[in-house]
Amino acid sequence: MRGHRLAATAAALLLAACGSTPTQVFDLSPRVPDAPAAAVQTRGGPLIWVDKPSVAGYFDRTQMVTRDGASRISIHEFEIWSDPPADLIQRAIVDDLAHRFGADRVMGTPAAHYATPGWQVALDVIRFDVDDGGDAALDARWTLLAGSSDRLVASRRERIEVPSGDAADPAKRVTALRAAVAMLASRIGDAIAAAATPDERRR
Image (tube, rainbow, N blue to C red; front, side, top):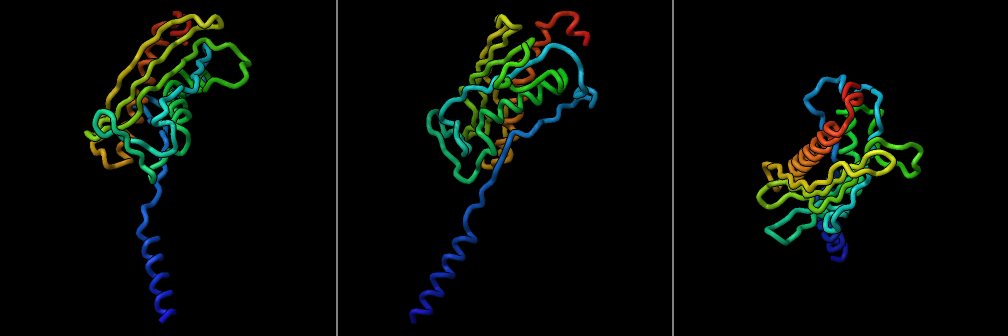
């Protein structure tokens, strides 16, 4: 009898393991814009540094979060980011700006300042989630500084929303969040282009 009970317990544990929710891991992979391949070729010009953003504590975690209503946050234990969200957002913006301005010109701000950037981007991300209606929301303050004197060129707050199409599908949520980051990078790039000297624009 005891042997039957042990076998039944083992079978129940095996079924529970087979029925457990698999962990899904996501990142903010490069979103390839509709532009010719030449756009990513090496070119000269002032360096553009992108600082690692400061991020709100509620989404500064491994697990992805969604927003239910105005103030309730849900944490998804089995839907996780491959790296801290601040690192992923920084890399995504670097990728998008590099596609626009040249891979040799754009990088994350290095720990040791071995050169002086022409432009430096600082970010404070206040919101980064998808709500129960399926809209991905990115709310960020960004500041563009120029040269070694850290001259203020632009400082704005952007509120970007992108529909995901399905709030229950984590892959679609990530795609919408990545699109929101791409829109933010585009607006930062526009500010850099507008502030560039005529010589820099011709490069």
